[in-house]
Amino acid sequence: GYFFMSPTIFVLLLFILGPILYAIFLSFHNVRLLGETSFEFVGLSNYERVFEDRRAGIALWNTFKYVIIVVPCQTVLAIFLAATLNAGMKGEKIFRIIYFLPTLTSSAVLTLIFMWMYNREGLVNFGLERLGLPTYNFLGDPDIALIAIMVMNIWATAPFFMVIYLAGLQEIPDSLYEAAELDGAGPIRKFWSITVPHLKPITSFVVIMSVIGTFQLFDQSYIFSGGSGGPNNSTLTVVLLIYQYAFKTMNTMGYATAIAFMLAIV
Image 1 (cartoon, rainbow, N blue to C red):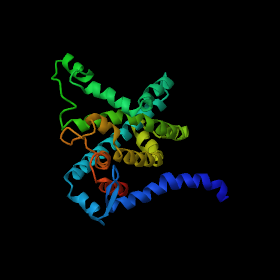
Image 2 (cartoon, one colour):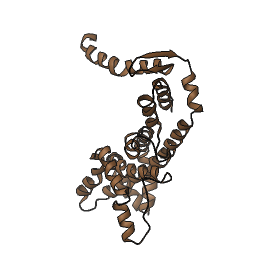
Image 3 (cartoon, one colour):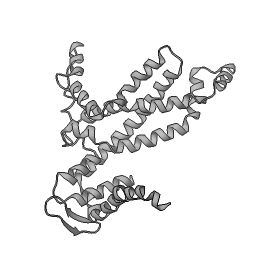
Image 4 (cartoon, rainbow, N blue to C red):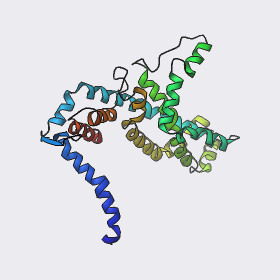
């Protein structure tokens, strides 16, 4: 049995467990991996440094804001889209494809499209100009840059969870809705008394997966800011900060792994 399992065990040890254990080892050292390799044991000082690092605090706050706004919005939007598709309207299959298209698009490509839309000469400002409204520097304003990423991710991620909700909606027996109608319940009452309670397990799954995914925000923030987390650290996330300390700053690989483990605990 172990002989047949050995290829999988080897892969897990080499690519999963091994790197985790090595990262734990690095988090207790000042490490230089590029060029001449060196290790200096520093104990818990890398973990203590996190609480003194101003940029780490900014990154955590940005990530927290991102999570508490994006997770509820994309969950509500996913339920709404699934409910509209489950209502038996004409062209349901076509709308299902249209709704799901953003999820099929590469996040890097999606980010570049939205950067063009948010540009000073982009689609959004073009529309504002046509309406006689003032244009805006969406990518250069620290108060707006993170919100711009939030809007993009809500739009792109909600359709994925919509499909999960749609499957859950189709599992709810029609007899429950028919019985509610006989009791005089309207659409809103049926939604809150039948649909929402039956979707609780799915909602728990969606929220957990959303929280995990949003805490790991990296690629959109990296592309939006060119890897800097700007403007003025407004799009700096925890994972982007880990990347900067690991690969852009010398001798801070150990500190980067310490931040990574604290994120894992979160």
